[in-house]
Image 1 (cartoon, helix red, strand yellow):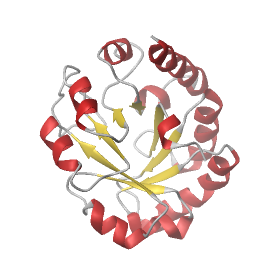
Image 2 (cartoon, rainbow, N blue to C red):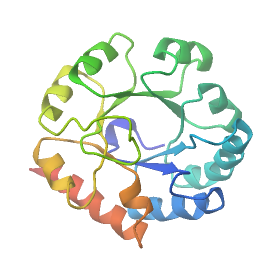
Image 3 (cartoon, rainbow, N blue to C red):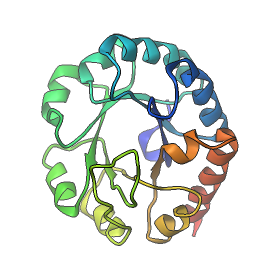
Image 4 (cartoon, rainbow, N blue to C red):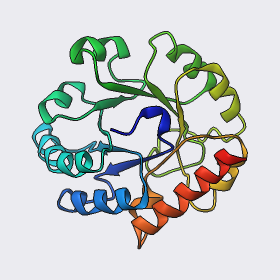
Length: 212
């Protein structure tokens, strides 16, 4: 599997943008474009529906050596053979999720401020998401926090920081100029007419930024 420290572009397969029946083909597109991590986010699906989607995705991600993470539900991770879970601020704690899963699984955490980034280190997630940087329909209940604290957030922690929220072809140069090393994209990839090409374009931009 792709090592977390080697991951720079994180994609989210969100049922708000992709029908369950199209998840497999979208995963193929993102993987061919160079995605490093994939998360299944299905906020309004039943556990049974999530299990079905994840089990269909797993052979695709496994063949590509791409970790598959589930959003919100650590107890479903071992049932489908996924590699980890992503938790929000209002979900169970990292320690609770680790106790449920045992060792060998990735656990990520969303953070929305420098204070939350600092607090997150008490539980040592494997990585954190930091955002939303810009307004995004994916997270309508959260205010945009901008890019000015990206470097500070990365300096606070020893784990990978994935910047998220409203990142697209227009905003990604600002995110990278602010020092971001890793980014998450959702609608800008999923809604593009060529998800593979868009993924490849963004991946190249991120990797070039690391070389500067």
